[in-house]
Image 1 (cartoon, one colour):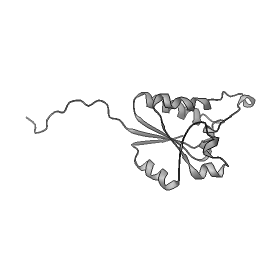
Image 2 (spheres, helix red, strand yellow):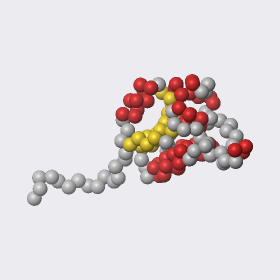
Image 3 (tube, helix red, strand yellow):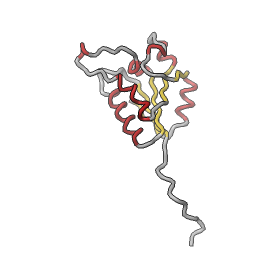
Length: 131
C-alpha cells in the first residue's frame, strides 16, 4: 500500500487566464477572435481577465461607427461579458492617455492600471494570451 491517501475529486482546476488585447478593433481579426476566445474560456468556469493595451483600448470606445467600412460593429458585445462572469477588465493608463481617452469614453467599467500594477497582475496569471 502507498503512504499517499486518495483524495476525493475536487472538480476541475480553475486557472487564471489573462487575455491581452493590443490591436485596434477593425482591420484585423485579432480583436474579434480574442472576444470569442474569452467567451469560450469563461464558459468553462475559468478565472478570466481582459487587458487592453496600446491600440487595444480602441476596442472599448463608445459610439463606434463601422458602416462606412462595411464591417459589423461588435463592440456592444463587451457589455455581455458580465453575463459570462468576466468582470476583470483592465486598461493601461498610458495607452489611454496617449490616445486622448479617459474612462468616460469607454463602453464598460474598467480598472485603469499603471505599468507596475499591470506587471504585478500579469505575474499572478497561469496563462497569458496576447492578441
